[in-house]
Figure 1: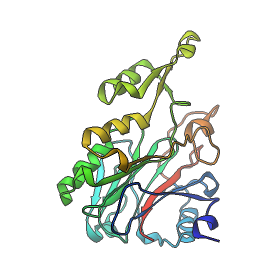
Figure 2: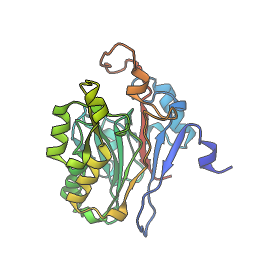
Figure 3: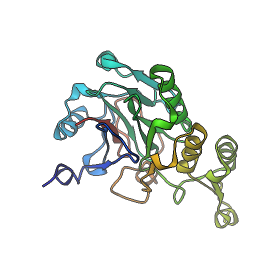
Figure 4: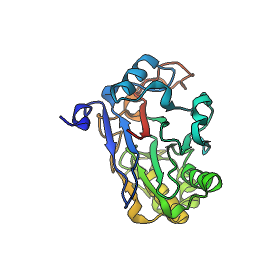
Length: 265
């Protein structure tokens, strides 16, 4: 039994596209069966999950996520004393670090720079869309990275088959990123829905990649909708019909927060 087969019930792995001469980090996402893995929610479960993959707790770098475009950069071993700073993206060049964010309908974005070796993962929800550009600029500033050297993966997230928004949000995405992000659903409009527009976070991020100059052959999209598939945690699907209350740090959420992480095995 291969490593991937052994852990197939609790984690999915996604490969980078493009030609890479050196060793490439592994991109992974926990599945719903692994349980909620948000830091502070059940740290014992979280520790056991990473241990099952041969990853010690001290290697995992996490954030206090704030639905932003803020990227935290950890050169070398700086991650060892980082704590959990506020932000939604992590970049490092330290091969012993395991950058990790949690998602449940928001898009995880993995990235790797074959030129400088820096790598990381981003939490990109609707408020944080644009964090990919922030990450590439941060890598350019810290390591002298080039956008053309990056490989990017758009992970499982709520897709436009399930993600409907109001006019204000639709106009924001259309104006800020690309008109291709948004589609008016005439059936929903005729039915009087206040959210008649279908929003594609993948199209928005693809537009960002194009504007940065990341080659198309180095961009991957898993094509998976978290809301459609019960294999994945989904805020919208799991919270449907439940009272809405923002989760305080350490409290339990009504949905399964998945760990999106990147590491060298």
